[in-house]
Length: 203
Image (cartoon, rainbow, N blue to C red; front, side, top):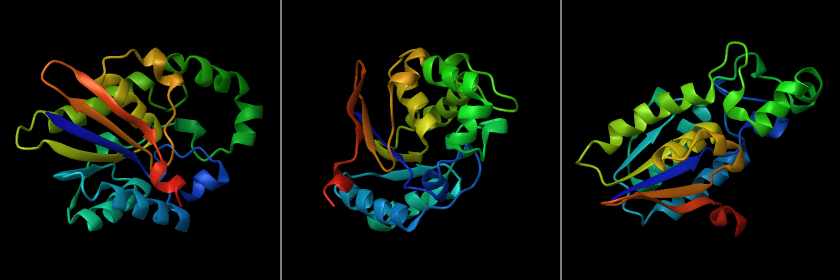
């Protein structure tokens, strides 16, 4: 059985400012660094063999902090970057609500149908992310591995691995440094844990 650990990056500076990040390379806050240490502590006894990460610094730094605790190097993969949000990147929620209100409603209700100028669609994001994860799954030398990535990317990975339609993207939420676990068993794939943040809520 293979076990896939999925972690979202810690709090970033644009998370605090409520700006859309997409593929902009935004660093962690001090709180985000502390969060990464807490999830790292949680994963110490999970027998993780390899850590893969988005190459964007908020995810890669989170992965490095975890890797230091597990004594593992990080393998950066562009496939696990956040969705490219095109013209939305760098925009605050306030501006989104006024300038792109109709598109924002579509993103919340039917995100799989949204087309933004210069951006990836959810389908394109999922294709990219699954290409990356399938490379790892097909490596028979690894059983337990961790992927540190971003909210939209992780949601498309979870839906892709469980063979659930992208229509359900809107029904999932992924918090900073949350842990989700998918087990690849002999006959099926099972979501063992989803969006768990007990490691930071206890502090």
